[in-house]
Image 1 (cartoon, rainbow, N blue to C red):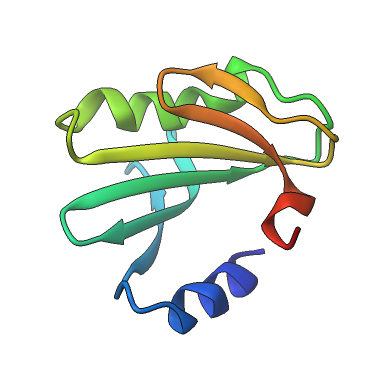
Image 2: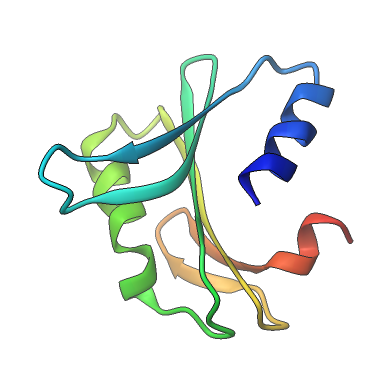
Length: 100
């Protein structure tokens, strides 16, 4: 998944960079952190077809530690068919939506 997103970002003109975030003790982890300019977006990839707020908890943790204008948003990619909110600026998005 990260490899595909990396290809998409390299093809764009936005000069974004990808990272994986894991705190020193391992209690927080985010699959993909995208930095573009001064803004940050976060992505988690889940095999669930209906992720919950618990699946977005590490994204919410990051959001709450950044200045509001720096956190661009978070996405939990999943295998289900529906897009819906998981909280302030965090969305559950079908993984198929990346190429649709």
